[in-house]
Length: 50
Image 1 (cartoon, rainbow, N blue to C red):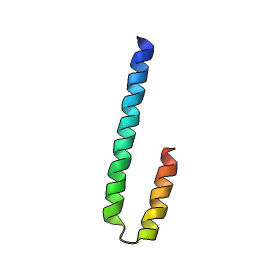
Image 2: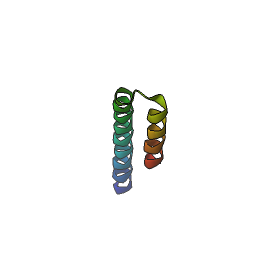
Image 3: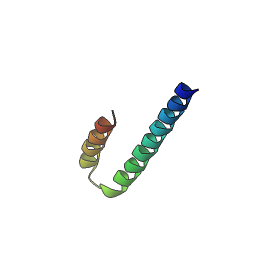
Image 4: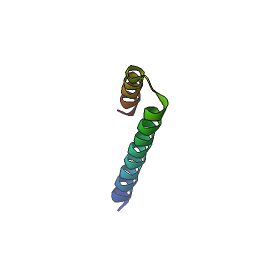
């Protein structure tokens, strides 16, 4: 039961991180007009999440 709770919390945390990443992607898409800068920044964000 405890292990299941911990797993559920872990999954919830991962979902929150993914939602945060999606929001960041949307913000970045709006912020950066320069595609090269947007791509390099997005890669940096992606690596930070891995």
